[in-house]
Image (cartoon, rainbow, N blue to C red; front, side, top):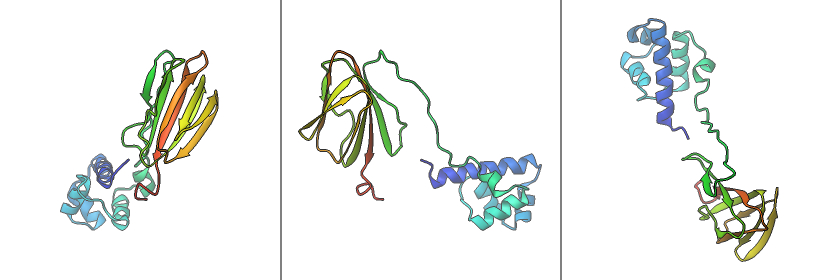
Length: 183
């Protein structure tokens, strides 16, 4: 997730790139935008995040629109990959720092274990891509067949066991309950 400091650095870098592309000095750009040279320098260095009116003056001075400046700022990082069907175990699919944790669990028949994710104050979603899986949530057993899903909020314990003769592939998604994460 992008922070204010990250945003300030990215905007500052874009403003500096545009100014240097125009062969405009820091002093000339500051004068056109009616800001001090030191303030523009702090913005370009990512040390200051300007207000919208100041940003509007800066983009006007540099011949940009706000849309051009802000395009792709704050855009999400996208990770791509695939699951190796022969791999057994837990593979984390989500990126660090995300509010949603996603893992894939590939297990052989007869395998049993506890939840591969932290259940503390969480909502848990489990989807079975292949195989047959028995999921026990706080003592209540549920059998999932290929394509089935279940969802539970704030479980105390989750365990699973692979049924049948085929390996299972399940996707587990966990999000902290909104009432617990300060939102």
